[in-house]
Image 1: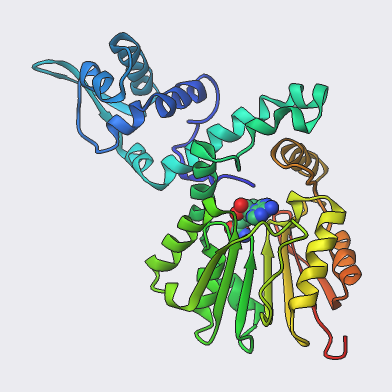
Image 2 (image 1 turned 90 degrees about the horizontal axis):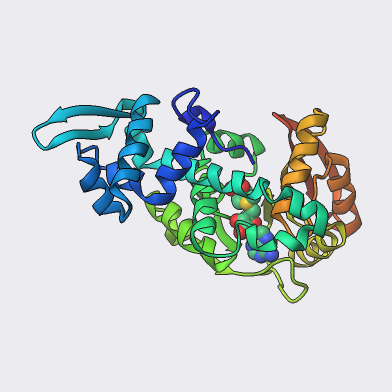
Length: 329
Ligand SMILES: C[S@@+](CC[C@H](N)C(=O)[O-])C[C@H]1O[C@@H](n2cnc3c(N)ncnc32)[C@H](O)[C@@H]1O
């Protein structure tokens, strides 16, 4: 999954600047600057709970990079975040935090190649704490253009959406706002649910949604019956083929005849380099996932009993696979 690097001032995430930013995030120095006020290194060190000399060195580097502005004041030099960097106090800072977590995960690659993916399980995002937060905040920020995307699906006749692996609920929010007759069930790990709730509450859609905890890759999870629109975005790549087959079979069982299922995935099949890199990311970041091509996903859906399966490339390495439960299945 690609963080929206375009939201960062250009050139900021390459070279030693990356380490400087990483340290600014990790130490809390960035948080101490987030309100836009000008402060001395000593004040920032006190707020962030770090060494004053270390804070001054870091702030001077941030200023040299153009991320902070230094000014002479009565009590000595002060620092404040520079223009475009003030956005780091909000959404972009969450994306940066996620990006830094991702870089940390990639640094465990040698250990995973030596010892297998389980050797680095502790490095993954979805293990609670700060990293998990960074992940869900990242998916919460990826909502641009989703309403247009779900409008194009033309599912106005559906009555209930099941969003499997809802993350921060950005797709469910798009569906509910585009299709006023729709209600929804959202399912994910407990850690995701406050994010999903926040997204739906912000757009006044919470009343049409049920948000539930569920480990849907476990055989014991049974989808709520009666959802005639099943949505899985960025979910199947987290699991092995047999695990996905079991999930899709349970979804088939709960879907009413005529119900439709949509799988949105990053397949990257058009570009070998990106495909290979995404596979590395999934090797590190999931217990058993990998990249799937659109046709592989189509075969999984057919294997689970779905019919009328179509595969459509949606650009930038993404694929949308549609299927339905035949009325006479
Ligand atoms: C890549 S994110 C996609 C989120 C959302 N569908 C979107 O497109 O923005 C995958 C989601 O699946 C959830 N997930 C993965 N494995 C899961 C499991 N075994 N049980 C519950 N949720 C799981 C993750 O917590 C995460 O929210």
